[in-house]
Image 1 (cartoon, one colour):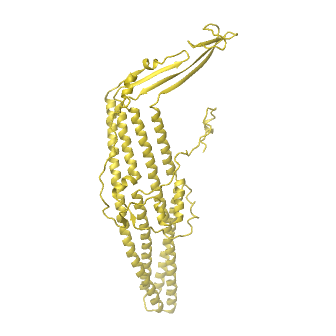
Image 2 (tube, one colour; image 1 turned 90 degrees about the vertical axis):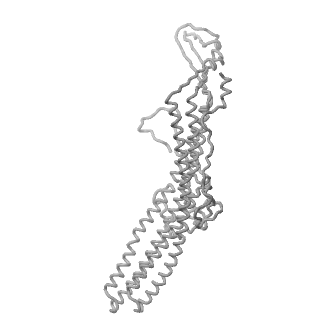
Image 3 (cartoon, one colour; image 1 turned 45 degrees about the horizontal axis):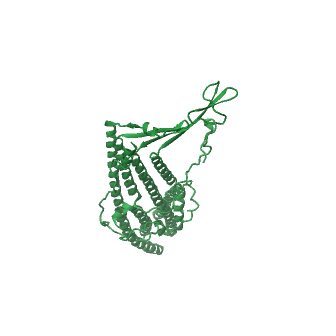
Length: 489
């Protein structure tokens, strides 16, 4: 039997995993601001050239709760792997016992002696006898058809999947931190623009009031000027609300209370500007750089290994058991006490079909993740290219409206222009400047989205081994009332 186990030890049923070859386009359909050079993904956010953003990204990686959860899943996967490896090894159970009995009888031995031919009994002077037994039992399920080895293989793929899941969480986190930070700076700029515009409109209101007193303007003009300045100021509270909510979201991303970053971001700073063009490489690169694609591929590999586990259950399983005790060493028990079991029926066959169907689902999920990755890059390229073109047009528009507003103010002061011209020029200038700010933000957001789509995320170290909760008093001890039990952090 042992010889047969050795001969079958290298057998494993079920399909062996092979990385699938998926066809991808040779190049991106619309390069836009991209270059064909390989993407520069490590620390891509530093190319926004904002030290505060760099600091927030590091703090978010250290304190974000989603990252901590993903790290715990890494520890879980590694523990599952060790558990699967343990199934390949024999199990040994120790057994020791001692017994005292009143009376006489049994086999006597000299004081301090031990009878290796059987249980040892010592008779005391008070008629008390002691019985001592020691030994261990051993059991081992021979992995003839590779069920346990497939389990180890699946667990190893599970470690890879948990690592990629952690990378995917980090990618999303870095992108969210960068996007929220840019939005916060954009709201500050828009609030400042609204204040400047309202002050300029107040000046127009003052001029109109003076002209009304001189009889060269109407009460309608004054009311209209006053209303326009008030309408501009009315937009400020909504912008301040959006700014505060963005700061709250950014604080929570770093693992802190919502208002924790209010003081840090209180002083306005310019909206970060990306360094363009962006190297994008070729579409096939996303198969290697996108963590969600790599995660889907590892899950597909894991489901393939589980087919072998299910198929191995269709074949005989052999378990060897035996014991060694002080009464004697009986190595032959490992052969004579073996058991062979074999069960074949609809349940086990259905288990194989279930595993195969799950493998197919994971393969389709992998294909879908690749298509999604390609779509994300294409979308980001198109959006970034078009937004840059729109921003250039808005810059021209803003410059023209600024000149028009300045000229109309001068002409209105001298009485050579109507109030309607001033009103129209001021309203158009404010709209153009606000649209230009939003376009600049959209350009940065598209830059962030492109780097995320290419697979750019955190490339530094993350502590995935230290538990979040440190337990105390875990050894045997008297249990107190349930109401007094609590987790120790």
